[in-house]
Amino acid sequence: QQPVQSPQAVILREGEDAVINCSSSKALYSVHWYRQKHGEAPVFLMILLKGGEQKGHDKISASFNEKKQQSSLYLTASQLSYSGTYFCGTKKTSYDKVIFGPGTSLSVIP
Amino acid sequence: DVKVTQSSRYLVKRTGEKVFLECVQDMDHENMFWYRQDPGLGLRLIYFSYDVKMKEKGDIPEGYSVSREKKERFSLILESASTNQTSMYLCASSPGGYTEAFFGQGTRLTVV
Image 1: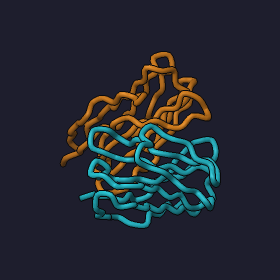
Image 2 (image 1 turned 45 degrees about the horizontal axis):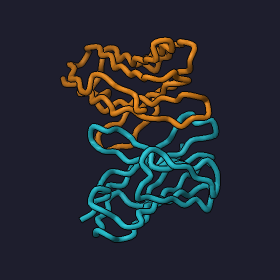
Image 3 (image 1 turned 135 degrees about the vertical axis):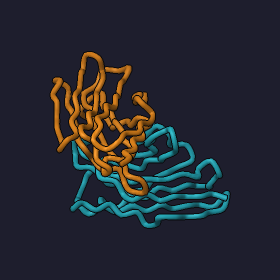
């Protein structure tokens, strides 16, 4: 099943923070985050494996709570370049394929 | 840099035509994927391949087939295009273990 993402869309002013959530009804092995800017290909941000580790990528970080089958992506002090659609993808096992969520549209305005 | 190249950015085809979408990757990746992207639905997996001549159905394979004769090339075939196959098609590749995937620029297909 496709993971659920929330919110569907969010508008931020530069410098504000945002959180994007991804949840699944099934136990997860890993969560994958991608960003797609308008008219471009999706680009990999990070993978989180079960074990609850938190990862960071510049001012973008993420956590994975395997008990709740949830992951959250944290965008701190947002920049105009953060605008785009954020997709989470989930895997149930290490050899499974990634199933992507519907995406969260994030717009950062001056 | 990994490069995944899709043969066309835009295509317009007529209903009933046989359509070929081509994808080439230059990083010797084992896995290749075809996704369809529609507003509000995210990236839905059509087919994937984990080796030459090997393929598996994804979540929405109906109306599509694939071919992987060489490791670097993965083709998506619409046997008889229909208007409900109008969409953005994205190809991706990844090394073994289904880790980071690299996407192509996409082909926007319109079936009229």
